Length: 386
Image 1 (cartoon, rainbow, N blue to C red):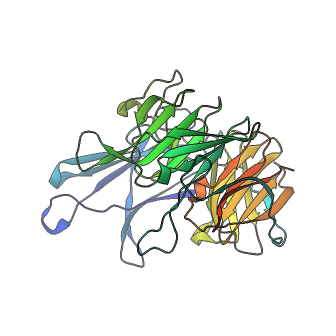
Image 2: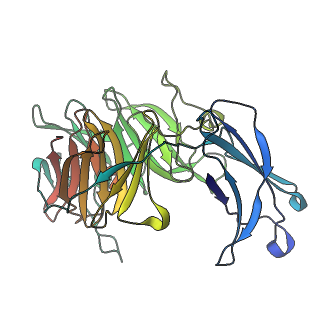
Image 3: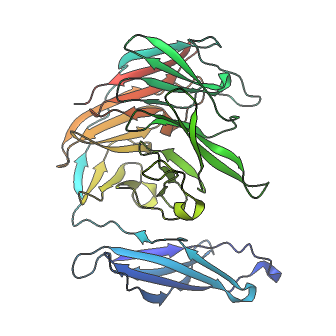
């Protein structure tokens, strides 16, 4: 059985700011489209907060997994809301949790230095500046690595993306196609084409609402296509040029398979990531769970030391790699059986602020690249897959 909980904040223009909710859950299993409705029950937490709950089997008798959506009505305001707006929230269930038992955390390994770029504004440097009232400086927050080995760094201080090609040790600059404010990221897609994400964005219809943008660049370093990205809280940009929304942990697709810009209506058809991760009840830092919905596998990782924030979980030729972010970075490669293949502790050098999701990249071999910054400049270090 699984308990589903929802909480609401009344922000409607109602006297007393008190909403009388009618909340109905619609659920089904597997690919069936015949939904059953049931009202949710109101409960009061120990903190005095209202939340609405339902308890349902995680799977039906045939083993098909739960899917659901919610309909909320506030009659005194004539307000109706469907959550999610399109589609359903799909539960991932597995018959067993495969144990992944971590050994004692190892001493820090420096890795292989594959790129070192000094601070500056020249063609082979990256910018850095101090922020008033903030301890960390501002510098490149993110990087990515193409399958041919090129390394791209978001050098927004110098209003560009700096690309290093290790084949001839050359540097190329791609002008930044927007005014950087915050929440930037970049990604080489599976074909090696660069995309740059502006997570802050700019208004479209409402002058007070900024909409993020995704810029797909052409081979001649110009903007090929730009798509507005209708997300609430962008979390990360994937190699398929989809944006994971932290709000509901589902993927938004700004571009169609033919490369055309998807409309707002088309972007409402979100889908769940194939790989999922979370800490267990009460955010226990010693136990984390991971799931592969395609393979139907779920893992429970146990550690004798705190794991830090989970920032990355990816399938590799060897199995999987999970990456944790704290004062140090910890990368764990493990097989589908749960066997540990490699466990390394990496430096997390942050002379300038780095975004955890933009700090690491995995290549097609399952090897890891990590971005760091020191008083000298930025560094990218390489850790070979097992």
